[in-house]
Image (tube, rainbow, N blue to C red):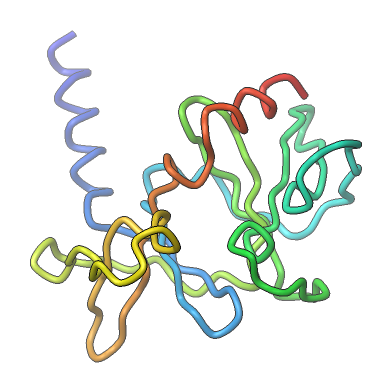
Length: 161
């Protein structure tokens, strides 16, 4: 049993500091690689009635029904027609699978702790989803807090689907 704990610790350590980065418009966002289950192309989306506009509907992914959220709409950006680069990032948030529609995936990047800083306190309300800012060369990545992006109520709705 001790060996299993050690293996899990090692697996966790290999993911520490790694972020999947993706584009929404011209902005680069990142989420911890540890919560990413897979990246898939667009699937046929079944619309669900009485959902917020950013919840595009549900998909059937190998027998699992997964709610799909358009991150542009969640972040109050204009809708953009989906294209060949648009994809769904399937994440596990508090044991709930959710598909995040993003403009395109950029890369998996390692960001050392010393290159991660807290966001400035400019308009804290609109920055509530940004956990930190990663500095990579002369560029920045907005590192998201997926726990805050989806409220417990939204996850509860997702589990009911």
